[in-house]
Image 1 (cartoon, rainbow, N blue to C red):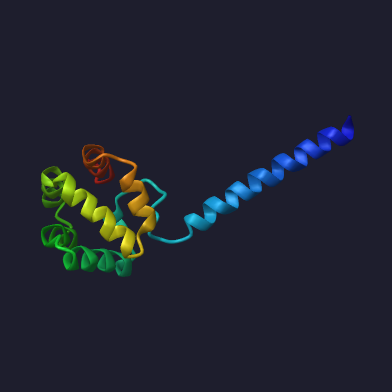
Image 2: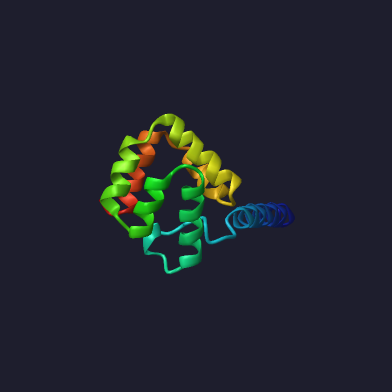
Length: 124
C-alpha cells in the first residue's frame, strides 16, 4: 500500500515538473509579457524599438508612430479601426519576426476581444 502511494506521488511530481518545464521553455523570453501592466512601460528599449521597427516595416506606420510617441489615444484609435484582415496580418508579422508568444496570444482572441484587452493593458 505504501509503495503504491509512493509510486503515485512520484508520477504526479514528475508529471507536474515536466509540464512546468515545457511551459518555461515556451515562455523563456522577454517578449512573452506575463505580468500585469502596460507593455509601453517596460524599461527594455531594445524590445520596444524592435517592435516599432517591425510594425513600421510591415505596413503599420501609424501604429508604429503611436508606439514610438507613447500616444495611447492614437493606439486606441488604431486598434478600434483595425480590420480583421489587418489583425490577421499583424498576427503573421508577429509570428514571423520572433514574437511567436504574442502571435499565439493574439490568435486566441477575436479582433474585438483584443481591442478590449489592449485597452485594459493600457489601463483604459
